[in-house]
Image 1 (spheres, rainbow, N blue to C red):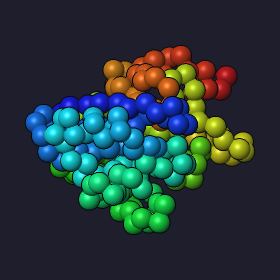
Image 2 (cartoon, rainbow, N blue to C red):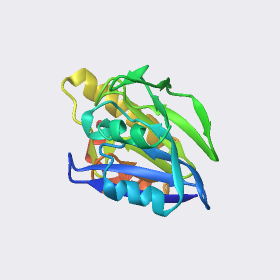
Image 3 (cartoon, rainbow, N blue to C red):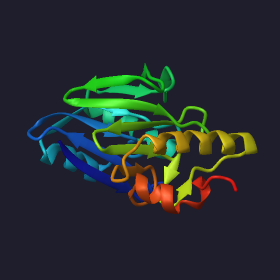
Amino acid sequence: MRFFSHFSITDFSNAYLLGPDKQGDAVLIDPGVFDELLLKLVENHKFYVRYVLISHAHKGHINGIKTLLKIYDAQLFCFNHTTLGFPCHRIKGGDHLQLGEFDIEVIETPGHSWDSLSFKIDSFVFTGDALSSGLVGKTETDYEQSLLLSSLRNLLSGLDDNTMIFPGHGPPTTAGIERRFNSFLKDEP
């Protein structure tokens, strides 16, 4: 597996590209933009974006889909039946996807948004806006905050300390670092 990240100054969001060791079908996670740099990243590695995983439907994570679908015949996977008017394969927590050579575990992480999903691929977890380095996603109510914290604690409890976490915004982190140092995830006294 080859792995690449793409940072966009539009909404300061991250997209992630996973491809085979050689050329072939790739998975793209959260294309908030699909600009020339991301296109070159795909094409220079002789990938074809066949699958798109969407962590949640906020614009900073989906706006690039319109451009991407003009170039690639990609399948979209998200919590909803559609995104931006395009049909999606509806997925939910507990699903396991086999997309090309990638085995993907889908984990529901609601709270930041009702449709928030995280994706575990090998020793990588892609959390969208649910979890960032030292932070958790923004919520509007105490109930949403409680739901998010519960889902994140559950997510982290099943991960090895060295599992890499790649958020929708900001730098990567590890499960061990988040368990030890993320003050939002500390158990109540």
